[in-house]
Image 1 (spheres, rainbow, N blue to C red):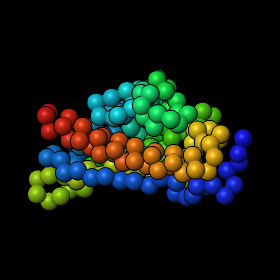
Image 2 (image 1 turned 60 degrees about the horizontal axis):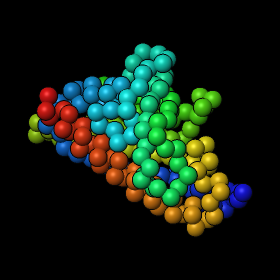
Image 3 (image 1 turned 30 degrees about the vertical axis):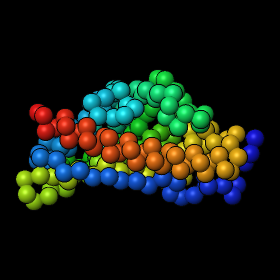
Image 4 (image 1 turned 45 degrees about the vertical axis):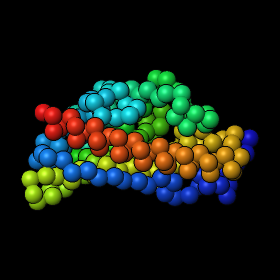
Length: 184
């Protein structure tokens, strides 16, 4: 087993991406959709929904337990969790009509530097910019587990391919949210 000293996995931030799309709806309407994580199955490439297990839905400090589904072909060579798996996340920002963010937790419910979110910005022409972003400062416990037995070339390949996967997920999520909101 290799150690993580001097590895790409120690880069901070390890991942930092965002994407944006224009949506024909008011900021409050968009916020009401993206802050309801139980609806994530309508737009997320992997999250199939879930439930609020602590606190008031969508409120800062509340914890959401997500049910996820990952196919075999997602970075197929890497030792990722496949099939159904569960995550827990704590809401860290909830400003109606403006921003909604959640931090991924360890299995012991400890904070990780892994934050997903949406920002809503009035475009001034009857449409709204919806920005979806993800930032992982230090690698999570899950990332360390995935790369534990990879050599440095494998780790670099994983980071490159996972970054591309995350970028595609952000774009796909935004397109699906736009479709959900504009079809209402």
